[in-house]
Amino acid sequence: MSVLHHSADHSAFSEPIHLADARATESIGAALAAVLSPGLVIWLSGDLGAGKTTLSRGLLRALGHAGSVKSPTYTLVEPYTISRFSLYHFDFYRFNSAEEFLDAGLDEYFGADGICLVEWADKALPYIPPPDLELHLALHESGRVLQCFARSEKGDICLKRLHLPL
Image 1 (tube, rainbow, N blue to C red):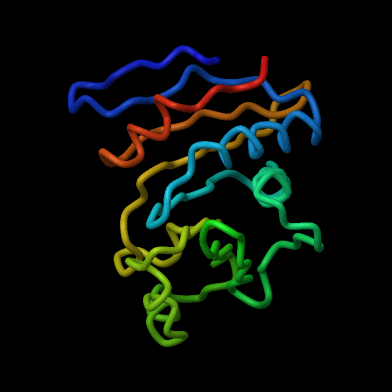
Image 2 (tube, rainbow, N blue to C red):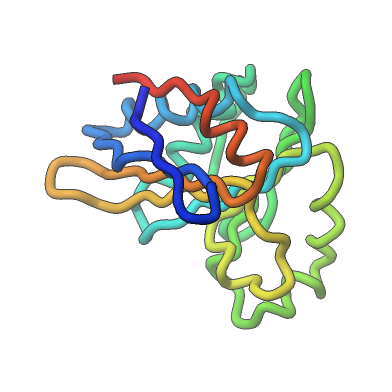
């Protein structure tokens, strides 16, 4: 389990977590799956190739999804129906303007009982709802580094319950 810290506004954040390879990144996704609750908005940030879709794949596999998991770069959203809830995986990398979020009607997915997992959320600002959790992945000389940030009370609860593989 990683060490959690609290900022001045009492939101939790994790120590940086080293991920040696894709398997370690998928394991983090699986650990995250165990603490999810309906209605969460999770932003995944990081450069191209940082492991956002790999983490999403681990999360979905842990929730019981047996099919393929691909980046929704061209489809904008990939919906998954899981036994406990629906999960919507978004990728806004190709947006030329934030208004495309509204034009595509993607705002309708948020605020419901599903979980919204969003890559490149900054490209939909200011229209996209704020995250409950923000997961930042960065390339590192020997793999990747993940840091988790709780941005709401729901996110804080998830992060405190998260047991990360060592």
